[in-house]
Length: 199
Image 1 (cartoon, rainbow, N blue to C red):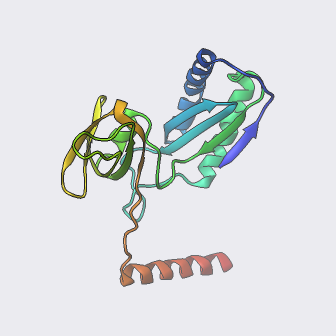
Image 2 (image 1 turned 135 degrees about the vertical axis):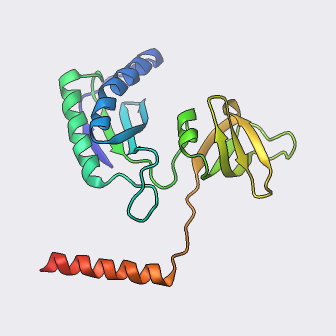
């Protein structure tokens, strides 16, 4: 996680929303120019948190969704800091955090859920479900739109959940066992890389 600072000031809720909107307008084209996606942006208590991810559907060499490397995070931090110094979207002191969502990512907006369809998620509800009296739902995210999500639980039951019912939610990273052949290939690749660096 990279951070950058400037001088301080308090803002009301309306002012905070206006600042967040302005920051989004400035940050979005910078993120896009690096081939990344602006996953989330928050401005709270003087902290500007920019969360970026690879474009949806982009896969790495292992066939898994590709992540954002530290080099791009560093470049992005410098570019955003430079733009903020020029445009001054945040009055007073602030801290800039540029990061990626990580393996288990928070889901706050409908577009976050749409992006994670067919992945396992965990949802904490604001109130218990009427039919089960449970406040937590975990399972496969079957579908998501602007109004609600549908989760298939371990009992193969599909549960429709309106966004207003969700207190918080996140994806659940599932460790996949590696076969012996894959492990040998990985070790061989590492050894080859190490030799190349040493020579």
